[in-house]
Image (cartoon, rainbow, N blue to C red; front, side, top):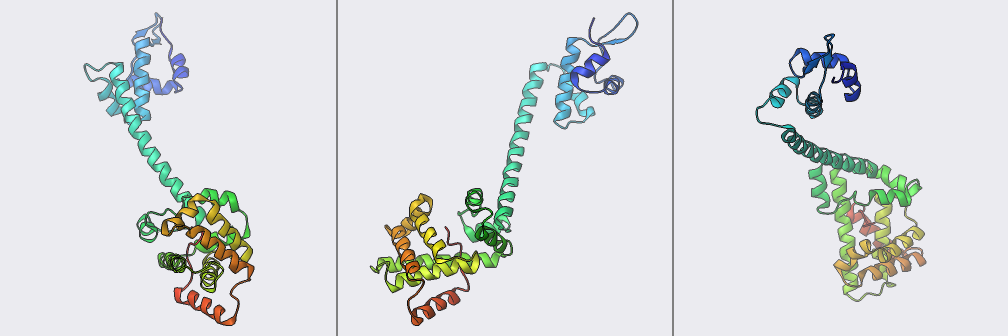
Length: 277
């Protein structure tokens, strides 16, 4: 008996008008008619309709689909294999697009507005968005987080270059003082710790001594942060943490001469860098 036009339209989720159009252009014509002359679609007709709708979903025009489905020697399985391959390629493209959108969302969240080429030039292999979601979960809504994000949104490529260069200088000073056997409670270590704190305050957020002390603890407790210092010098993470604590306990450098030295360090650098890494 077969299926009526209305039944097929409901099954396929398309309109009766669409089925009539497919019939008119020779894309899908019902194989049978009832005694009264009404169209009746058979199971093979439904299989062909499924192929047509698959190809339509993949973006093929009706003219292209006519050629594809009428190619001699191609059965339903051949079409399904081709469609699966096409869908797999589409999934790959969509996943690439999703990843790009995710990166753009992360960059917007952190306020890092650089092109991919500029980001690589400034940060190298380090991805400033890698911990963006974690940072927002930890500190999102806090004054420091909002202040940091607001400042970062205004920075240019040149600003980020200055930031990263100064951060490298601070790390180099930590390494040199540690290698020289300077105690973390000594003036040189505390001067470097104070520059580190001012670096954060100059570029990202108002970093109090208590907040700085918390960062120092994180440099030891979090393996990702500790690795940055330990890769530079064995035992450096703990040494930096102790220097930060010593500087915080003293409320900064102890006398006018040391304070002037710290200010000169900051002025020479032209600002500060991404020191929370």
